[in-house]
Length: 379
Ligand SMILES: *Cc1c(COP(=O)(O)O)cnc(C)c1O
Image (tube, rainbow, N blue to C red; front, side, top):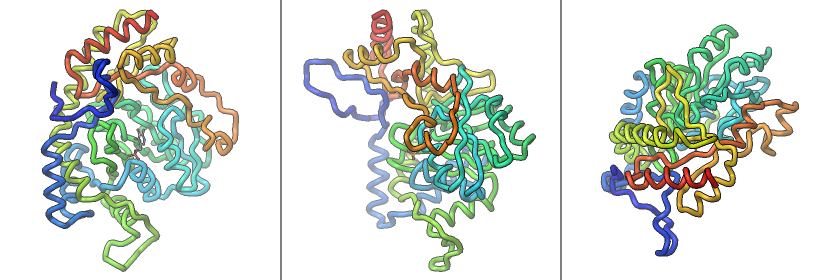
């Protein structure tokens, strides 16, 4: 178990065995020491730690310029604004994702246009994207859902054919690769999140990976009230800065993410092998060009809700990502303006359940997950 001194929280009572959490931030002594060092320095916001964190992250994404911000949502929003997306534009997004994807499009004044997913990896289906292209479409924003890359070969080809930009929501996909190249480095920009449940964390935080230095400069301006030189504001911007405390945590996490990713893959391989024979359960599929990082280990089950309830009773934490597709959320149902028929999105929202796969799991935890899932599925 490589749990790095992490602690489990919220263990109720002393009768039941400790529940196995669905996700767990890996925070250890080095992160605490890094925070102490920053606090002692008195330099708390967007100083040296942030600059070095950006450089170190850049090494993971083909040396593209990186701009650290205060959340993954800000990374998406500022990336879109810097790319010139705004009112009158349409950006094609999946409906089967966290609401931040479509929110970031809507916050620019553009319209998120929801397209269906393919059933094997839960990512945007290229044919559905092509069918959604209109004269107003300016971009395609795939989500590398659960840590599995969307089909970047087909989506890049579509973007080229129709003269569209590609924006990547890589918030769940640190270190994932497609055809040997890192995700987040294919599009005009890629956005990463460092929320505590993600594969690495800074508490709150995000990173914009930019295709070129011009875009990076605009994102930097938008991040800090439109200022490069103090009080010489060039455009109307936000305060979306990352703190040095967060960046210092991120730098320690960056040194560990490769090991954690290996552990996630090993845990997934174990679950694949042990759950292969469970009737009705569909284990995750991996595309030939994909290097999956298992942000989530997501299976399909016919009686998903029943199984989830039984697993909760047995002390196995699970998650459903996502029970309501975006196009049916109150925030988008009206604005999307048409009766969308997204059958694979609907089916996935009924069938998916994510099992614990994080690097804080012991061998015993994993065996218990398998035993309880096997039992819960057979009722
Ligand atoms: C987490 C997440 C985001 C938003 O990131 P925050 O850091 O929480 O703002 C966006 N898109 C997807 C797919 C995510 O999982």
